[in-house]
Image 1 (cartoon, rainbow, N blue to C red):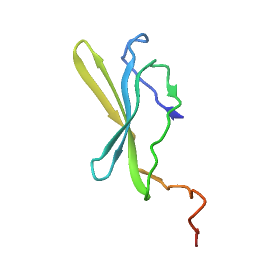
Image 2: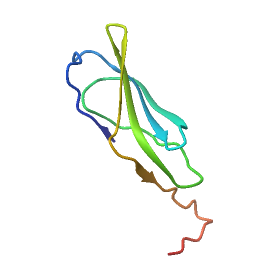
Image 3: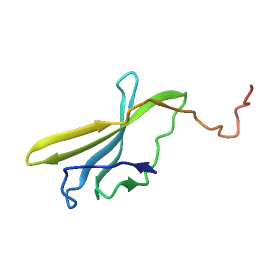
Length: 88
């Protein structure tokens, strides 16, 4: 679940896109046109290797794009599919 707080954006204004942005600039769109209610369940893509990401939230108010990124990167680590052997 992605959580956010918004200020100065009308309650009825939907969030246009919720996405993940990697340190390399790769972007994965997770959800389109959802309510601006402060949280949304998303489905993450399948990753073959670990990576660092920020969450990006986009909307438009009065024809002006409003974009915000999470303050810090966080790591996503793929889970084994039953064939890998995890080692410490």
